[in-house]
Length: 194
Image 1 (cartoon, rainbow, N blue to C red):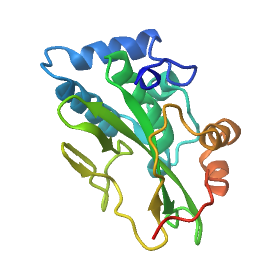
Image 2 (cartoon, helix red, strand yellow):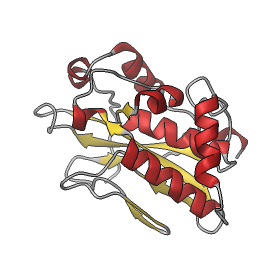
Image 3 (cartoon, helix red, strand yellow):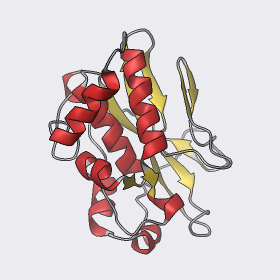
Image 4 (cartoon, rainbow, N blue to C red):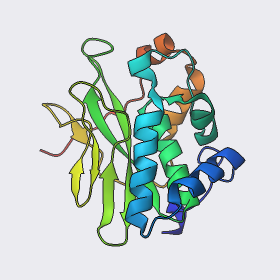
């Protein structure tokens, strides 16, 4: 479980602003579930999803996501992990392979979300990408209410990762604008189990 609590260059929760916010969101909470909900709601509702707002900056480090208040789903999951890990709550990364036709026709890409280890429920998946028409992600353990329901040819990657996937970080580092990113969303090709 230790690897799901580690600080990294990307999940930089010792950054002064990130750590301060993590402590503020945990204030007066009586359980890890309350802390996790506060952190989830903060990221979901206060950090713009770069695709929804067509932001011209691409963030990947948790501290930059907080500083610029924007990020793709992957980057938002990095900030959520940092806030939770700063509070001693194990947090990992999960991915779905989804159609990205809202950005470009006939392409698939990875969608990033988190798994949080809650004492009462075990691993619980949440999706802080941000709500909009047709997207209603909630924090209601033990029920998982993610942003997207899987459609034909879409699937969950089966693992919970302690670090973001390299293909995700490479895409976020290389592509600095909205237009650059939608041309080369991160993806992974393997067959889902039917």
